[in-house]
Image (cartoon, rainbow, N blue to C red; front, side, top):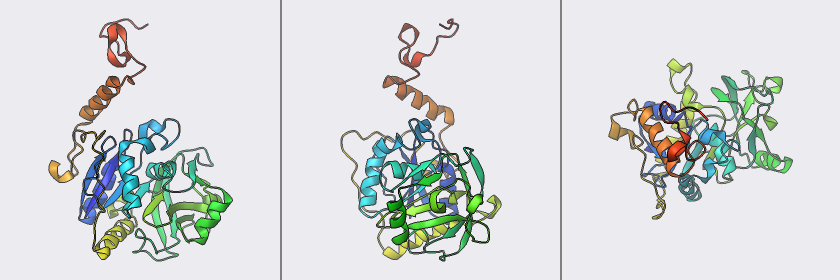
Length: 304
């Protein structure tokens, strides 16, 4: 099985997800935000981070990335998509899931272990769990408070589309212990066809005992079991012929680079990003001295 891991400017949990897939015993490929080719992925992961620097609001810019056109087509065709943290925010902005994620009620960034009660095992992402079971999964976010109008909240409950709720370690309601103040303690939801999951906690960070727990692997094993049971893998999504961008250096299949531990140096990726921004007229406030792109000063030039 192959997982496709989306990479936007500012994504930072892509390698964590790749490691979880490696522990699972399967392969993954990085999907660059400017590309439309999902490279035969059987499940697409939108990982955590700060896509496009959270400009405008979290996920608001990422939803317009060329890659998201293919992700939406993939989901419409029945492909499995999981959005984690920033990925959940992107899914809501793209209207693949209802509601929105706003500032934590505490107005603080929270990085801590949370306890999630599995509300339904009737999804491809929770089939290896039991309804009512409590999982220990960490969070890492400042804007994870799930909100929606009362009608949407009622519909999610009625259709059993709430996958996880924040609870206390014993499974009782979170109350004041809620890490972000989400309405009805919602930590994760699925779409109407149950093939798209969004959740704020990070299952990839609870994938090995050395990380403090392995509860997150239950989700990855559930995805694997769902695909194997179906007997079919990824639906075919043909990338658009016009506007597709080549994969960025260092973002090809992991197997092509000798394992998830190898990746293009950060300097190389950053250099390409700065070069592309300058070419598009978006680098650092426009042309600089003597027409230099990105407004960068020449060495030794005095600041204005």
